[in-house]
Image (cartoon, rainbow, N blue to C red; front, side, top):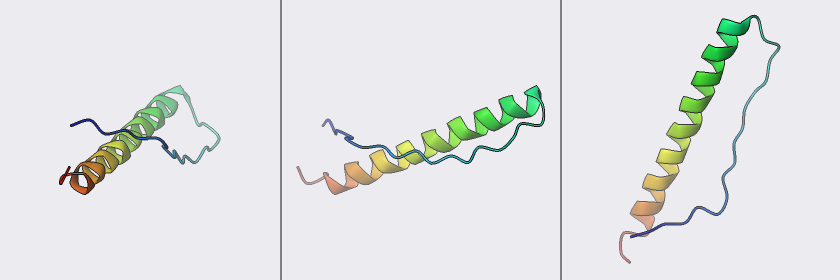
Length: 52
């Protein structure tokens, strides 16, 4: 069963960077957070459309 996500809101807070290593760490954390939210939304949609 395919699901379609038509809208994806991404909220991030951007601060002044301290140094390059902290930038990379912050970027990785942001990517993981976005991935987590996407997975949560996909699971929610699958449960919602389970009866199809």
